[in-house]
Image 1 (spheres, rainbow, N blue to C red):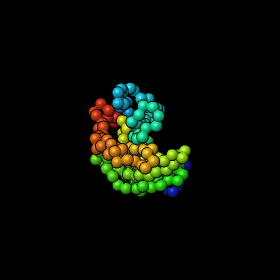
Image 2: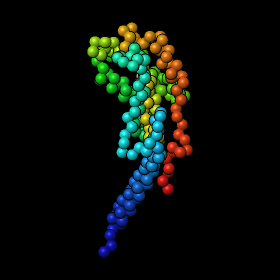
Image 3: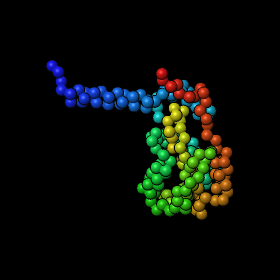
Image 4: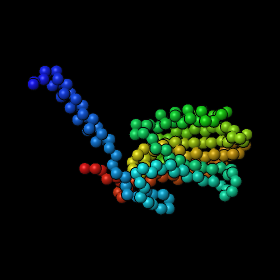
Length: 192
């Protein structure tokens, strides 16, 4: 039995859509990750299902609250996310999470390790105590070449805010920051 021309056109369109979708999925398929995951002191094979939610915390004291702490965090983001969108999302999250949020400096352009960044400075009270933060965010990637939002946050519990010495120490740290390049041994193998 012969089908009508409209059925054949429809079948051809469906085959073409299916082919285009298969090509899109193939292009977007993630390459296998590099064999080793690196931290400061060691490396290991990270199973693909393990999510890296690393935070580095630096303080001035061993015990008790530190007058200044610096936290470096990384958050996996979508491939289509851009810095400005992530910065606006950060502002929304801060407004929702921190009651009595007071801006010292609203979101402004900055640079960290030669890449575009956004800077914000704000304060609030936590359990009745003043907290003052200076935060920089920028985009980078992990060892799988997946995009990350990097956050570097200086937090001071000084009642008068971040002191000039604390601010200076934070910016000295930022001046020395270098993004680790992907080495040949870390580059993902592209599927054939």
